[in-house]
Amino acid sequence: MARRQFVRISGTAGATGLLGIIGADRALADGGQGPEPSPPEPGGAPCPTPSPLCGYPGDTGGRFDLWDRVQVCEGTRTGPPFPQCLSTTPTYVILNGGSGSNHDFLLVPSCRIRGIECPFITTASAPNYWLDAWNNAQPGQPGHVVYPHLGLGINSADPTIRTQDQLHIHLAGIHSGIQTQLNTHDSTITNDPSRWRNQIVPIWGLTSTGAAAPRSYRVLHVANLNANLFRLLLDSVVRPTGATMAAQMMAVTPRLIGSGGFYVLNSEPGLPVAPGQPGGTGTVDFLLAYA
Image (cartoon, rainbow, N blue to C red; front, side, top):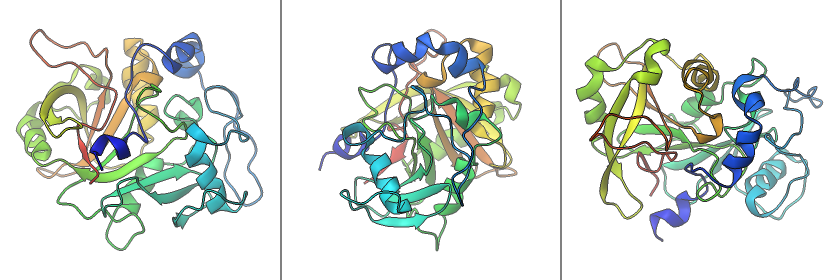
C-alpha cells in the first residue's frame, strides 16, 4: 500500500475549503476561549460545547469515522465500525493507525473535537493530550512505538489532506536523520516561548513517495510535556503573528542531547521565511514514519 493511502487520515493546510470557513470565525478560533465547556457526562470529563469549529456529537460516517470508532470503544454506540480498541479511558482512546505497522497509532479524544481548530483544546478544561500520547507510546503501553526514534504529530485542518475530522495525535516513528538535523541546530533553538514564532529551522524530511524534501519549522525546546502545548502555540505563535490555529501543524520529538527534554515543531503553509529558505507546511507527513 502506498504511504499516502494510509497517512491521509490526517492533514496539511491551504487557503481554501474549511480554512476559509474557519477564517470567518477567527476571533473565536484564534483569540477567544469559546463557549464554556459542556458539563461532564456521568463518569466522564468536560467536553466542548457543540459548534461548527468543534463538531457535533451526532456527526457520523465518512469524515467522522474516527468519531464513530471512539464511540464504539466508549460503549456509547454500537458498530459498525468495529475498531480494535487498544486502550479506552474517560478522556481518550488509543487506536491502530492505517498502516498496520508497530509504529503507527492514534490517540483520539473521547470528546467530540473536530481538530486543532477547536478552541476547547487550548482551555484549562482540556486534558493534556500530548502528554497522554507520549506516555502511551512507551514500552509496555498500548500504543508502544517500536522505532529508533519517536515522533508525535497533529495536522492542520485543510480537508484536502485531513480526511478525518476528529482530533487525533499520531504516535509514530520519526524519519531517520531528522534527530541529527535537530541536534545540529540545537544551539540556535530557543527555550523561550516568546521567541518561538521567529525560531525557524529548515529540516529535510520525506515526501509521500519517499523522496527527500525540505520544509521550514518553528522549533522550541521544552523541558517536559506538562504544559498544554496547544495553548502555548496559541499564545506564543498564533496570536502574535495573526495566524489561524486551523492552519497549524505540530510535532513533538525527544531532544537527545544536552539536558534532554523535547523539541516542539510547528509550521504552516504561509510561514514567513528568509529568501532561499524552504517554505512551511501544514502536514506532519514529512517528519513521521508510519510504515
